[in-house]
Each structure stands twice: as structure tokens, then as C-alpha cells.
Length: 315
Image (cartoon, rainbow, N blue to C red; front, side, top):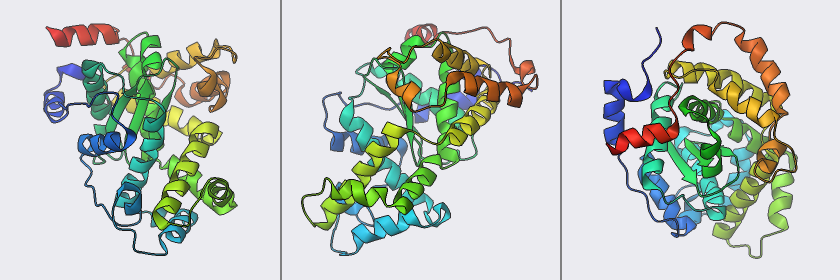
């Protein structure tokens, strides 16, 4: 049975209450943003442990730097959920350090509630999911392990209706639930590229700086080159199914890809999105094969734009 629209469910009302969160001004530094993310997502700040040195916790273990590389070099299954969340929280600072939060608090709350509603239908609803709008005119979305998802204001402005934004968020949520970023980090750690990246930047042997340099170098590398094509195709396929489970038209993501197909590589708005993802036509072809007509019964809902949704919330 098709689920009703987003804001018509009693479950969403409970989610909205839990997600009625306050956002800090865009001018707050990255560390302040990490604290904010910690509060938004509900994660507990341990202060110490493997990555404690990055956030000001104890750094007495002389093997912490080596432990980080060793952890990433082992199987992804060896990274438990608390470590996954902590790694994601640190990688989120890479994104927050480059772009500030968008100052529209109503938009931030709306995207956070929308994302959390969709995440409740995912395979990992218990993660401390956090959805943030970046003050960036470019067209892109990012995710980090543990439930951190970022979308740019430029992307939201280009969404024709809510189902397109839902499809994008569902795609990013699937990256997280499938641990795609952790798998990509493991490949980098095993290849030795991580050590080379850190060696070119680190100026001291202090353990805290070593761990921080490892993470930030890894984050910059990861988000600059993107994930494997197979990961993107998988997130497209599972993303449309997740969007449908959350009550949205599964063809929202298809509409997004059709828009990307018409974008030119020299358009600065789409440069990063095109460079870090497979060609839009290849993604559309993969989705057509996977979807067929199996999700057609979930279409036909009256489109609602983001502006209409926000306007309704003001009344």
C-alpha cells in the first residue's frame, strides 16, 4: 500500500517534534558546527577513544595514528557503529570547513525533518541522522558515515518538486546504510594513498595532529574524486525504492538525473556533481533496467514544491 504524503502521517508529527531543532549561525567555526551536529544527530561525544584527539580529548595513546590506519585497512565489519558515527562526524567537518550552513532556519528544519522521515524507512533507522543545507549555489549532495547528509542550497533551488529532493536524500541515505564511504576509505588506506596524502601535509609528529591530518586528507580526497560507479548505481536503485517506501514518487530521482543529463561540464553549478558521479545517461539506463514498470503504481501523487511546503508551514 502506498504511504500518504510526508506531512499527513501521525508518525511524522512525532518525528517533527523530535526534529524541532535550533541551528547555529552560519559564521560559527567548524568545531562549533561539529558540536551542533553532535546535538542534532543525538550522538554522544565520547571525547576520547580512537578519534578523541581530533575533538580535544585525551591523546596519550602513542599508537593512535597507527590505529587509525590499521582500522581503515581492516574489513569494514571491524568498524563498529560508534566508531562509524565518530568517523562520519569528523569527515563532516571537512564539508563544514569549506561551506557554511545556509542561514534560513526554517529551510534547515524542513530538510532535516524530511530526511529523517525518509531515513526511518531505511535499513538503519536508528542512526543519529542529521541533514544539513550548505550555503552554496552549486548543485550537489554529500554524505558521511554514521548518518550525516548535506545538500546545497543550489540543489534545492533546482528541485522542481519535493519528490526530487526526496529522491536525492534517499540516494545519499543509501550510501550511508550501505557503508559506501567506509569501503572507499578502506581501499584508500590499503593502497597507501592515505599515508602519502598525510606525509605531504603533516608538519608535526604529535598524535592528535597525525590523526586529524589523516582524516582531513582522506576526506578531501574522498569528496574530490567521489565514490565508485557501482556504489552510485546501487544507491540510485535502492534510493528510488526507499523514496517510494517513504511515500514519494520514485521517479523524482529520475527527473533529477534527466536534469543532470542536460547540464554541460563547463557549467560551474554542476562541475563537481558531474565530475564525481557516473554520466547521467548511464545512471538513467541502469535505473530503467532495474525499475521497469514495477514502481509505476507508486506514482501519480500531486506534486508539491519545496516552496509550497515551506509556505504551508508558515500558516
